[in-house]
Length: 286
Length: 190
Image 1 (tube, rainbow over the protein chains, first blue to last red):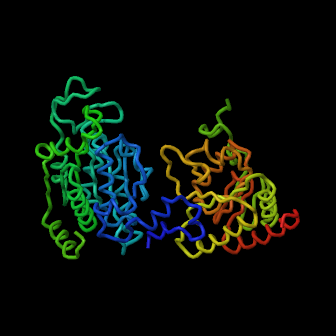
Image 2 (image 1 turned 60 degrees about the vertical axis):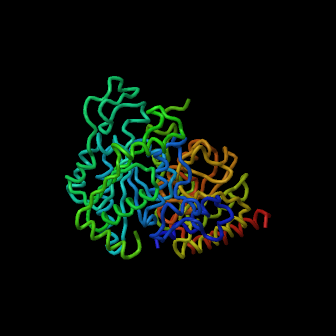
Image 3 (image 1 turned 180 degrees about the vertical axis):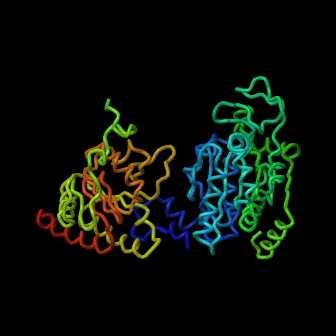
């Protein structure tokens, strides 16, 4: 089994740091029923992160990592952005792509894995921000949907280029003003979830990360559908509390308030995706 | 300030720019010379037994019990540490650490300024470290410290180490332990 790579040799248990031993003994390997409810009692796959205090993106990443049904056989492809500060600290295979081409890299990895391990489920998940997914990488993202690549794409939408000082992105809503966009955005937010549907995704969801259980369900469904059918897309609102002028404990309230308006929960499933989800539900995995 | 090296990223030339290549099969590399494996083993044992703060850096390929060879090698490395009176500092993965690593507890090739215990470790063995990271770390140590580096590699070896032993599997490590015991006796340390 792949998670043997986390099993420390008995001879070395006294010299490796405690967190490495815990990763073997207390993390949830080989258990597709793992989920966000395990977070308080098991070892997380994210050791620590270097995002700002109270950043909703860090919560999103923790929920996603806790929800992966098959972490020992999952490869995460990420891109430049705030999220790239986190990936060096997680205990899974990750690939940092160029800014924008994450879906192309993920496509290649998935194809090779299918060829190399035809009898084993290996999931490839793209985690990238709005700049990488919708601005710089829109072409690569949509082309991977057109090609029906069996990957899950998750977009962390904070509606701004946050770590470069606050430039507007394609996902900034019309009229929003940021430090480096003082005149306010002149055109509408790109409806990426709709583009994903039109481009052939079998499962699409749009939500905030205010509800961990909902995030878990969406992540699992998207990964199972991608495994069996083709591309899936999840659009998560993870506001940048610094750029919109909130305190570090305001992130959750900000997301809850958007739950009722432009990030109201939205889900799309093709009939085939419904069948796949029903199958996994019958197996008790959803 | 040092001048930029030929590779333009390190201030010092790496071994390959000085014409040093990995040894052919069945041989070992001792500084710039291709020598017999046993001779290199003797020199490696001598360096570990005579230099300050000798340390073994086991990498993920031997730290984790992912196959039978790794389990066997783990036992032998523990024995090796006893014979050579060496410390063991693990290189258990290659993630850069935030805010910084503790060099007393681990070695990480992403933190060149902290590796090799602020240059107090004067001899070390790399074993079970994935080649691409061993190459990075050995280059940094070679250029920034006076640590005597020994690479025990299960593949082709590393030219940036002072001694390279290639194709080191269980049998070869057992042979090294025998050589190390002999050298220890010769040095009157047994």
